[in-house]
Length: 156
Image (cartoon, rainbow, N blue to C red; front, side):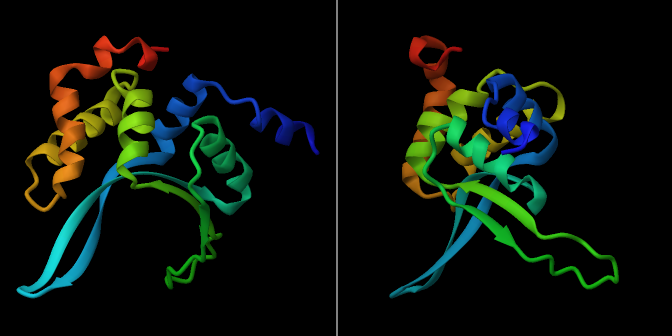
């Protein structure tokens, strides 16, 4: 193992937050399913971080540091504009338990600048967007109640 690969294994919370500030996002994925009354579209809250595939080990180290079980996906570059782009490695977290118990407390009141604004808007949209499934609304309610301020388990 190369020296730089060993150092990837020893990430700090602040390093990960800085990495996410530049390479991550708090977003929504769209899910469609068929019901008797037609096709229903849902917006599923998601945290994502993506980088060039050469940083696959770094993305995996972020996942491991956060104790997530999610797979890190490598997607082929599909942009057909004549530029050679490398494939991208992505970690995407959509599961309500991981968002509520890992992602939100990890970033809660610990981001600065635009990413802090994006994070807060994301949580507010979880609460206000009618197409977000009801179970995810708990994240917004906990945020509004100051739950992560009062629970020492989430303070680092």
